[in-house]
Image (cartoon, rainbow, N blue to C red; front, side, top):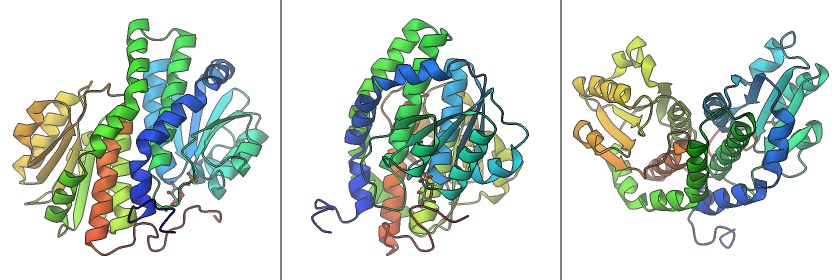
Length: 359
Ligand code: G6P
């Protein structure tokens, strides 16, 4: 087992550090097939995304990508809800995108079966080759992340996001839904993703120090807007899964509608704030937290954030739509180091399984 960990203390840490490579493989592994798949799904106006756990968060990001780049209407549903609620809604004019690392999650398989029964087209985004989801679906895109041993998903999430981004770009090209120049710029940045991931992996020592500061905290909040909602949800999930600290991820607009009542002196709030459509709105949310003396940690590329943060993590400048792939990495590291400081085994979190094959 030590050999398989290649010198890392845990599989999870190894898998976090593999992400530059994994994202690169996801890009290269799909370059040829992506346009063919885009061709096959371009006509669908109703898109349902079904998934659970971390894959569900990739689905949330996918919604923003497909909406902004391909002008599609996208509904993201937990597979466990979809399978019981969409019987009379999903039909032959629907495209169902199932996202599943293992390809064996019981609820997601049930959602795929329902979609097939109702005549929908099913595209699966899967990591495990030959898994059940791949056999039930009309179309499959692989994430090419390699085996993931840690129960908490890391490299399979960033590669899911990579594939979904490629799909959204391919659709936009085909449908002519966005400015060509902008699209070319996105493609260029996509190619550079492994480099950006490498850069943020270099923040590990800083994050370890941050974890030492935060180890005594009981509740965390993660806030973001737009595609960063996915990062907020996933950052919070990582913390819950392996460090057993209570965490909530939410869209920053919801802050005022309840969670703000829980912010008091020293409560950590992680604000995911890349430059983009809603940056200014994020700044005002952060100020609201500051006014209640919350402990503000910001991730972003704009130095303005420094003035409103206790801790500012300077992120590479990257389009907001691609940012979830880079921004989640420091949050994975934060969850990992908090788990270690609390004496937990991050590879085998209590009560959780790598793949939930019973309902
Ligand atoms: C379990 C795992 C998660 C995973 C979820 C969905 O809860 O612990 O890491 O995100 O299942 O799994 P899937 O294989 O369908 O992506």
